[in-house]
Image (cartoon, rainbow, N blue to C red; front, side):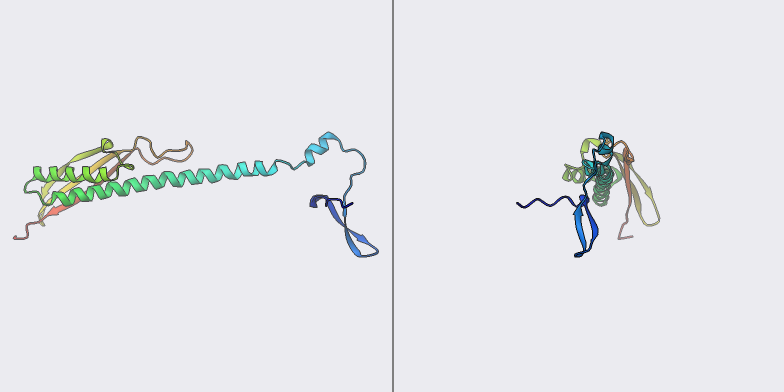
Length: 175
C-alpha cells in the first residue's frame, strides 16, 4: 500500500548511515495539549493576512478612484469654461457675450452628463473691463460636488465646491 506524503512542515532532514541524508516524518512523542495545538495551528492565517493587506489595498484603490473622478470633473469644467469664453468672443456687447458664454457652458456641461450635472453649476456673472489689448472678460463657474468624491470616511475628500475661471480678451482687429 502506498501512503500519501506527509505535509512539508512535518518533514525533517536527518542524517542516515546508508544514504547520507534522508527525509523523515516528524512524529510527536506523546499527547499534545489542546493549548499547544491551538498555538501551533496555522489554519486561517492566510485569511487574516489577506484581511490586513486587502484593507490597505482597498483604501488606496478607492482613494485613487475618488481623486480620479475629482480630476476628471475639474478637467470637464475647465473645458466648459473655455467653451464659454470662446462663445463670448462673438458677442457684440457685454450682455450678448454673457448670454453666449452661459449657453456654451450649459451645452458643454450637458455633454458630460454622467459626470456633470447642470443643476450643480452656478455661472458667475462675467466681469467685463477695458484693457490695452481690448475688452477682457472673466468667466467663472462654481460646481457643487455634493460630496460625490468621498467614498470612504478615512480618505481625505477634495473640496465640496470647485471654482474654474478663465479670462478672454476681445480685440478689435481693425484697431
